[in-house]
Image (cartoon, rainbow, N blue to C red; front, side):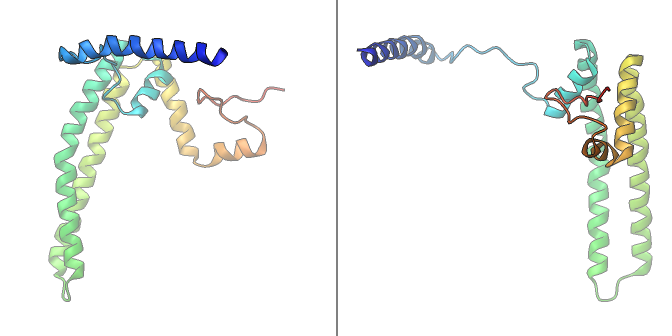
Length: 174
């Protein structure tokens, strides 16, 4: 008896869903969907947004800057890739031209320096949209990055608890 009640409820639910979805599909409208503001974003960008507690305006500006910066980086990265391929080909030759290799190395170095300058400029642009508190959070995270494996060693030795689900490190307080 219990099983027939479940089957009856399941059949009713299935029939209701069928009656609701078929007319929508036949009309060509598909399922009603609420567009997500994060559908096109990198998961890292979403985590950064919530870690820094960015406002929607800040996040929109962040997205614009990210897209503009990516467009600036692409030609330089492509040119650097082409130079590195030429350099690899020169090294594969039986008698590589030292002058060509020297020119390619200098060209690659110039492009890497250009990338470094672009990165510095982009960091300044991104930091300009943040509040002082958010900049402090970025600086604290950057310091952890500079420490390398030290934070993990602090966890292993018990000075710091494992990160919680939210990703924040919880210090052990005596």
